[in-house]
Image (tube, rainbow, N blue to C red):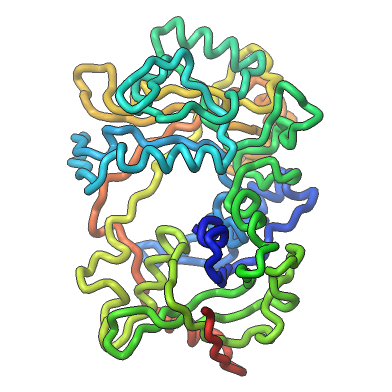
Length: 433
C-alpha cells in the first residue's frame, strides 16, 4: 500500500513500531534465531487461562515478512466458497478468486516469485498447472523460473511421484539467478526458512516495498514509533488522528535518508507522545495487533472499541495449524535448501473415502540444523547425537487451518490503555497532509 500510494505522489507518513532489522552475522546464527529468539519481541501476552504466552512477533520494518519462509502461495479457488470440514463449515467469502487474480499476478511480480506451472494448459482466464490439480488459473505465468532440486530432494520427489502423488515447485520469493550465479543475490544458503536474510535476497515488505520509496520527498518513515490509539471526530464517524509513542532516538527516514537501526523523528525525544492528524489512515498491524489497537481506541461513541458495534473485532481469529515432522533415514541428506517442492493432494480432500474432508498441505522445511531439535529432544541428549540425526534427516512442514470460532478471539483484559502505559513527559500534535 505504501509503495503504490508513494508512487502515486501522495504524502505519506509511515509509523513503524520497531526499528530496521539489523543486518548482522547473527541473522544466520541458528541458536540466536531459534533458541534465543533474537528477532522476536520479548513482550508477554496471556492465553485464555491467564497463563503467559510469548508470541513470535517480529517488530521491524517489514514485520513478519523479515523472518517468513518466502513461500508465496495463492489461495485455491475453492477456498473462497463454502467448504465442509469434519469440524464444521468454512463459510464463503463475499468475493471470488477471480476478483483477486490480477492482484496475485502483480504481487508475484513485485516480490520476484519463482515458480512453474509446467506445460501450462490453457484454461478459462489464462493458464492452469500441469503439476498441481488444485492450482487455480493464472492470467500470467510466474515471472521467474522455479528453484531446481538438490540431489536428496530430487530423489525423494521421484519416489513420491511413483506413489501417485502430485508434486509441484513451491513458488518462492527469493532472488536467485541459477542461470547466472554472479548476478544472483540469493546464495541458496542453509539459513533461510525462518531466518532474516543477511544478504537481502528474500523478498519482503521492507526490501521490496519500503526501501524502494524512502528516497521520495513525499514519504516519511518513523521507526520505533508505536501507534497506541486512533482518535475520531466528535461524532465518532471518522478517524482524524493517531497517538504515538516514540521510543527511539535519531534521525527521521525519508527524503534521501539512509536506513539504520535507530531512526526516530528528531522532534520527539525518547518516550514522548505525539499526535498526528491526516486525511486518511491505514491500519496494517497484523491480525492480532490490529484488533488490539481498535479495541484500545474505545471512546464514548465507541464504548466497546473502534469499529466494533458488531462485537466482532478480534473474534473468529484463525491461525495456520502447523507442525514439523522429522523423517530419519539411512541416506545422507547433504542438501542446503530443501523447500523446493510440495503437494496439495490432501488439501481439499483426503484420498481415504472414510474421511472425505480437507487435510492440508505438505512441504519440506527450507533449512534445518541440529539446534532446532534441542527443545524437543530428551534432556541431556548429547549434541553429537543431534548432529548425526541432522545429516540423516528430512524435515517436513504440515499445515492445515482453523475454522472461524467467535470465541477464538483477541481481547484486552486487566490492562491499562496503551497510551497510559508510558510516562508522558511531553505531548506534541502534528498535522500530516
